[in-house]
Length: 404
Image 1: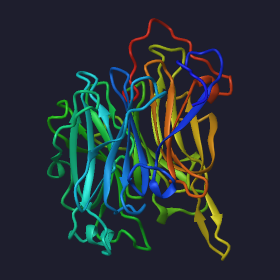
Image 2 (image 1 turned 180 degrees about the vertical axis):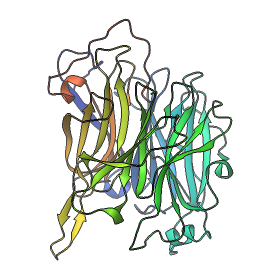
Image 3 (image 1 turned 45 degrees about the horizontal axis):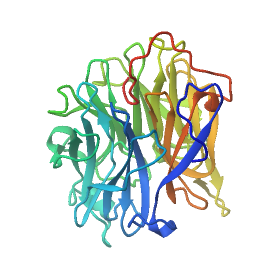
């Protein structure tokens, strides 16, 4: 980091970033070939918890994967040593998706497990039911110092007809009614790689009893994938979804849908003409609302890139141009955008600190998009190029990065 900044309320624009995780293959010393798949949560005490997957031997999705964590107590200026939160011999443990219960400060961490790839066609075995993808959850009541023994919740949150399953990645949200919601996706049937269609769906799981139990919520129509969620000021739930590659023709657009019943059901999805993507995960978080500030603001992050020619008559997607956007009308339009990283970049997550500093935790690299995980921190003036500034209406209550 180049200069000490303390608040998004500063009169001048500022931006700084630092690399948090670098895989050993790319010059790091974490003890893992590749570190990727970012997830962020900020505790009631202001501790920043940055999660990721540590991929032990390769960068593959079905490698021996552990869930890692670094914590900061000073707004991201310094960090504790890496903690291994979840690890199991011969297993893929990934897709971290933390959410904090505002009522008691407990941080819940759902994740998924399956046997690690070891010369076997792991995705096919998952779809055939021979290597079931299972869903687990752990929790911390001390800001991530210690974590409870993980418990399996597959029987409660996975339909028997579902094969592939993923929690997040990214963060969950707590709704105004207290329910905690986790964005997920799943596949139905065995034609995951079919030419005709992609059988994936976005869906949510939720707890309305402070994590004691978890249930399946609404399911978005086929053709959606990894997703992110935010609650709008009128109580609606907005879900923004990665596109399904088999449906892509021309420029690729993000899908979105709405729920008017706290995520029990979702509308038919539509495509957002502004939110282009190369088929990738994205970040989404509320920044401000009119109850405390003069404007509603929701932030979105993703690699805003599309297709490129492969030189032999075909096209491929290229993950680059990590961009952060602002919506002032509750996800109807995205009128402000700022390029955060020009080069290769991919998965990201967003969080807001109590002092209203904006954090973007994202994958990037020089030649490949997942060489390292970088945490950027900046204020609204930087994001808006000086066109927007925070103006509190009244004395602020402590905000939370994943509420609403």
